[in-house]
Image 1 (cartoon, rainbow over the protein chains, first blue to last red):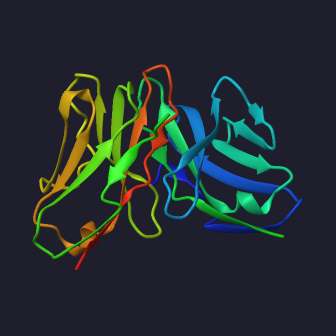
Image 2: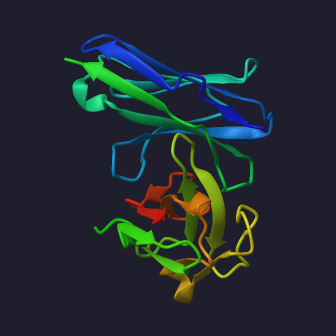
Length: 112
Length: 114
């Protein structure tokens, strides 16, 4: 049973527009959430994170929103650039656990 | 500074053979993880080392899988009697300390069992 779900396997967006990647979780013990970005033939790289005490965290073009009541988080990329084309993984950790649970990823394609 | 490195980058082996995959974490990182990513799947946790504590092996799929971490640094993941379903990308990650959740991943080893 997947505790972290990324229900959209892929997303296609025009350059300059907003990309919204979604992630749902089922475990109410999760209290720290991370997004990783992965290019082909490379390992994932950390992008942005959010603690459950916040509902929003921004870093440049990237913003993560957390809705604890809905057990939902989303990553917004504005404006999207072709270099953002990659697979994005959502991950969640429970308090005191340093073993995160990863979603299956969403492949983002940003068209020039 | 140097990131996490893994070797080999690609490994093709015959069913039934043993393989060893190596991970060199970032110097000074106390935690080390092994994950597996099969085609179309997410990152499947295999094993977690933290300092000198006993490793968390709860993700190892069978007793054919084992891992060790020597001197708190380099780690080797061993798969004995490989099966075709072991074909995947094996990723290693390290973590600076318990105050951080952000993992640094290596480029992975692509294992193909024929």
